Structure formats: C-alpha cells, structure tokens
Length: 135
Image (cartoon, rainbow, N blue to C red; front, side):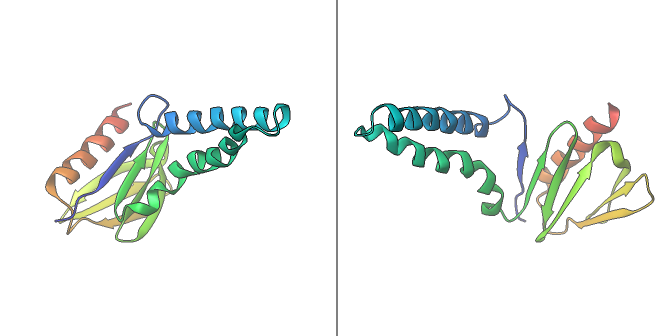
C-alpha cells in the first residue's frame, strides 16, 4: 500500500507561505543592497530569493501521489493522472470497490483508482470531501 501526501493550502496552514515571505524579504534586501551598496555581498540574496519563492511551486513534482486542496477546490494526482476540481462543481462523491468517483453537476465524472492506496489515506480523503460538501 502506498501513502498519499495531503497538502492543505492556506496562509496559516503550511510552511510554504513562510518560505515565500522569506524569499520576498530576501529579494527586497538583496535589491536594496544592490542599488544602494553595489560592493556589498548582500546583493546575492536576490538570487537566493528566487530559489525560495519557486521551491513551493515544484513541491508537487516530488510526490508521486498527492492531494492538494483549499476551501474552493483542489488537485488530485493519483497514478500519474492529475485532475483539478472545484467543490462547488461536485454534485456527489462515491467511494466504491477501491475507486473514487466524483460526479459533477454537468453530469460528467472523474474516476480515480484507489486500489494501491493505504486505508488511512482513503479515510482522510473521505473526511475532506464530507467536510466540504456539508458547507
């Protein structure tokens, strides 16, 4: 059984926001020192800030199976298929025979195979969809 990485997006929910804010701060310090003190070594912070700001964007490439969501919608990547969904666009969610089916309001479906996913991760996925459908 393989595990799924769950990432809830939000300003106070994860470390990524802090990393991006630190990157922006390094950019401001680096550019300020570049123009005010050209011989200063602090101007190298502007290059380091690019790494800090882009790191959270590439985090999804490190995980083979991950689910990213916020209050509006999310992205599910299971078995190399990545699909985006909106909670307001989903009519109902069906977990049956190791399969996740998201029925949309426009009568289309999104299917995901959960055959090699850990049982704890399936229950967490059910909890996410149940909490968002109640609202």
